[in-house]
Length: 169
Image (cartoon, rainbow, N blue to C red):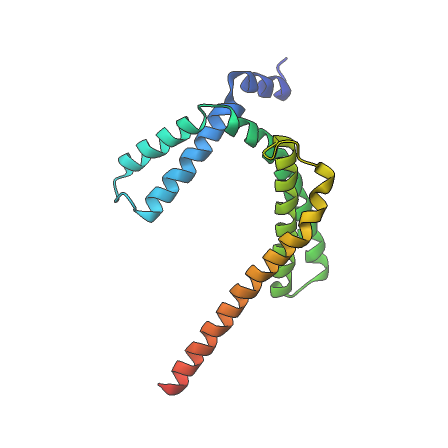
């Protein structure tokens, strides 16, 4: 009897997870970006050939497969944490604005943690100190705060400009 584990192991042996799925993801993203931006016109054939070439060239060495094998398990854990936060937030909050900002904060924190663990496992920075990543959290939070302040401030200034134009007109 063949189990799901056997099937997944056979797929892994054939390179489905190391080559086929990463190539499909890279192809889809590049094709979508080229099609949406219309940089090269509306010719889908050209966009598909370029996306396919880039997807295959990205897999020429094992960097992409190794990176995907490193980041996606951590991302799965992060998504699970976000799901639990969603359930808990649904029990205690009725305000969609508060929920949106809370999820943005939790998602940003999860993203930072996932990237730090991925960098540590993938060895992008050579011998990276896994225990020292906590030093970077305040810097990341400050940068995120500045980004949020700029976005919120820009929205408020646009609203003020529109209301001033409506009052003058």
